[in-house]
Length: 295
Length: 262
Image (cartoon, rainbow over all chains, first blue to last red):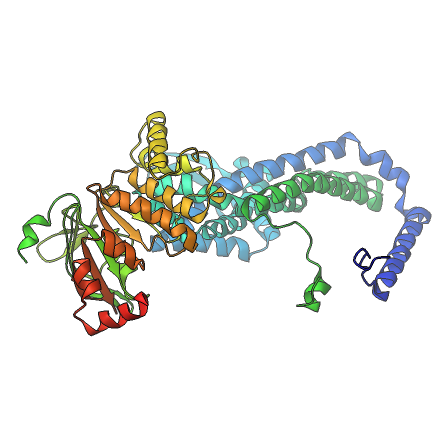
C-alpha cells in the first residue's frame, strides 16, 4: 500500500474499554432492579400517569412557569437598566434588590410571601398626606397561587437581571461611542444598539432559566398550590403509594425538561453561529489536559 | 493670532488651554487650536501622544478638565456662566454631536444592521427622517465611497477597508460640519489603506472641516492644510505640511520624523 494513502489510526486507551464495561454494568444493574423490585409498582405508575389530577397539576406547573417568566423578565429588564444607570442611588437600589433576592433561599421567600398578611394585614392604596385611599385585606388578596407567582417572579427577576446585565456588558464600548457620536438618545441607543447586540448572550441563558424555573415551581407545593408535585402528593396522602407517584411526577418533569431542551439547543446553536461561528463540539477535557499536543 | 475672528461659526474648532487628566496623569495640556471652516488638519505624533484623546474631546466622548473648547462656534457640552462652565442636558449635547462626525479606528459599525441601515441610522434614528428617502440617500453615499451594491451586506461580510468606508458614509449622512478621523487606517491591512485614504482625499476637496489623527505622512503632506505634531499631551509644533514635515524646527519633531520617514 502506498504510504501516502494509509489511514492514520488513533490510540484507544484501556480507560475507554474500562469505561464501556463500567457503563454496561451500571445499566444492567439499574435495569435489573427496576424490573425485579416490586416496590416500584410500575402498574400504579401507569395507572396514575395520565389521571386528570396529575394532568391538572402539570397544566398548573406549565402556567406557573410561563406567568412567572413573563413577569420576571419584565421586572428584570427594569432592574438591569437601573443597575446600569449613571445615577448612583438608582444603581444601589438595583444591586440591593439583586443581593437580597439572590442571597436568601427561594423556599423561605415563598413562605414569607405566603405569610405576608401577618406583617401587613391591610394595604391601603392612596395618595400620601390626603384622605384619598382604598384599603384591601391582604389575606383575601393573596391566595397561595398569587403568593407563589409573586415569590417566584421576584426571585427569578434578580437572576435574570444579572443575566441581562452580563448581556449589556458584552456589548463593545465602541458601539456605544459610535451611537453617542451620532447624537443618539439613551432610549434609542438601548433599543436599537445595545439590546439587539446583547440578545445573543441573554437568550440562551434565559432559556436555561426557563428550564430551571419549570423544576423550581415544585417548591410552591409547600404553599399547598396543586401543581404537579402537590397533585401527586395529594394522591399518595390518600393511597400511601408514595414512590410510584413520585416517579409519575419525576417522569413528567423529565419529559418536559427534555422537550424544552431541544428548542434551547437550537437557540444556543443559532446564537453561537451568529456570534462567532464556533463549532458546538463539546470540550474534551483530557485533550485540554494533554495541552499543546497536536490533535 | 489675528485669525480668531475666522474661528467662529459652522465648521470651526477653537480651543484655548485645554487640559485633560486621567487621575494624576495629564494626557492633554495647554492645547490651543484654531481650525477654520473647510480646513484639513492632520495630527501626527507617537502613540500615546494624546492625538486620539484630543479628537475624542472634540467629539465630546471625553470631557475636558479645563480650558475653552468651541466646536461649530458653540461651547461643547457645557455653557459658560460667570464663574463656571455648567454641563448641558443630554438632549443639548446630542444635538451638538449631530453636527460633528466621527470615524473610529475600529470602525464601530453596528453589526446588527446592514451597510445601508448603518448609514441610515443617524438620519432615521436620531433626526427622525422618513425611511425611504433616507435609504436612497444612504445608497448615494455608499456609491460615493465606492460601495455601490453593498447596501445589503452586513459588516461581517465586508473587508476592513469597506467597513471603514461605510463608517465614513455613516458619519457623512448626518451632514456634519466637522469630521474627525481617529487613526482611520491603523486597523487596516496595508493593501486596504489606499482605498480609505482615496475617499478621504475626495472629501477634502469638499468644504467639510477635517481633523485627522494619522500615521500616514504621505496623506498629511499631500492633503493637509495644517499639520500638528503632538508629543506627551502637548502640541510641539504646528504649521503648513511643507514646514512641519519638510523643515521641522523642534528637536522632538525631527526625531519623530527621522524614525517615521525612513
